[in-house]
Length: 147
Image (cartoon, rainbow, N blue to C red; front, side, top):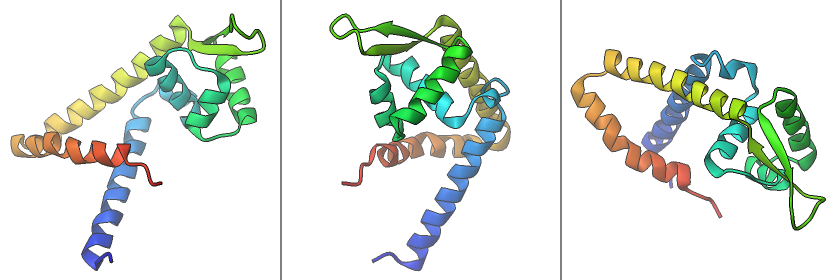
């Protein structure tokens, strides 16, 4: 059973992580023109390569109809390409265009620059060492799947 101390830790972590994510979003002028889901889809395509719309919808945990709207908007902006499957012409693979990849890289660059400056200017060398060590358990939390 969780103690008051455990509950306080969880609440503080959630609040702090949420605030940091919001600050990172705010410090990417390029990314502000896109919704959170649009940025997430572009990040998936950047990291994974071509995916089917239903795969993207499943990964983002949204309906295929919602994904269709997102993909239409990204296509209008010139950020994605659609390529018909050779095996099944009814299926289209979605990938990032060169313009879309450039946007993802720019957003990441803006966020990384802000975070680097914040770490260097706000943290002591000892705190930077603690941040490096904290990445291990934080990544475990990100990878944790509740069955």
